[in-house]
Length: 513
View 1 (cartoon, helix red, strand yellow):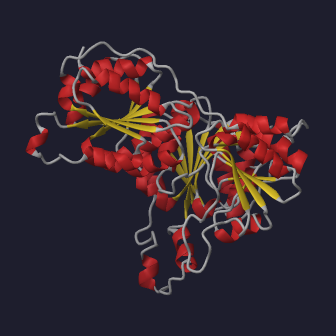
View 2 (cartoon, helix red, strand yellow; view 1 turned 60 degrees about the vertical axis):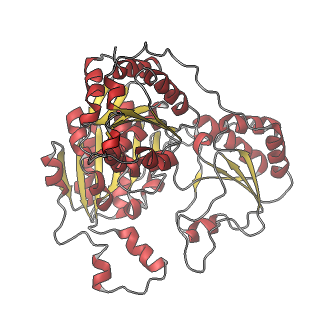
View 3 (tube, helix red, strand yellow; view 1 turned 45 degrees about the vertical axis):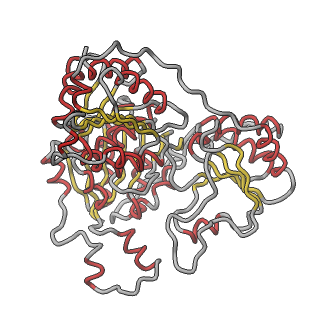
């Protein structure tokens, strides 16, 4: 058994089932090992950023790591933007990066690079394998790191000779790491703050956003009057009928500071104190009022769900949680507007759908229009690196093949990882992509004014414009095997989206805004 085969079996022994791959010569023995395995599913992508985004989406839904298989430093670099997003989402990912054989490194061949240096900014753990005999043990360690809660990114760099040389037996299943509990002092302090009569807000994210955690937070809110918020961008948020409501913090500073106005105390659960996505001239970076007392009930690395349950018990907060009832929006007809398209999504959204949101400005009405629709999970762009939506939809669909995935995407962001459509078609994944074609980086035009830039002439705006020539997503999708259509009215979108929700397989709808 060579190193690649022993490594692969070690990963399988530890519950890893899916590999999103874009390999090269240095990975051929790993490709061969996967090809002989009946237990590892391999999914090819045409760009490494699709592999890393798909692994992120898979981890968010499956709760365990997927593999990426990437080619040396350049392949890792191509994957880095969506690894950044995965890192901010606390997703479990194991990167397998091929490298030149140990004895070949000294020649500084054209593809030689500092793979360790490239991996560190987008990984929690990096290991370059020394020998074929060491490879199975290193792979086992990677699974332990990746399976921490919340998840971590482990990057294993594998010289080609470590993959092809004879190795030792695979490592068995490893003990899963346990998650730290919040300290009793933190729980007691939070209870004290919530009962001292001051205006108190709870801000939650990550492990604090399970259905059970949201129910505990709702009970705490009923007992104390505290308002509960979640971060603007969250790895996954349960929403809709049968779930407890939570207010999402606004993206723009003006929105968030208005929401948090008057807060005297803030308790963070699975997150940190809220700050602006960017700095703006003359505006504060912190969203919370000056003098607001900050307290962490549970850090991101602690069991936030249990901490909220313990806090509710300490407060004797036992009222029945306020679960949302089903109330769909009315369909709108006539012109295609941001409001009409959001109403259609809310009206036709099926039970247990997964919404992957990279809609930027065009999706402004969708959260409100889906708040009380069928139960669904909402995935956000946690790291801000655009081009996450299409790949994450792949991973979500692979993790949950019995659930409809709805990807809401701006046209500019979609072009970063448009190759994902080919993988969707090849795997026949049940994904509906709604592309908002306003033919511009609209959010950047907004930001241009917000940062105080004075040049608003044609040359400036052309740098944020996606016309001349116009993108044609129907042709782009068709060229990669995905059924696609275009609509220009609300009535057309109502019909096309309803049809997409009632059929399976990949489908793209281009909305002309």
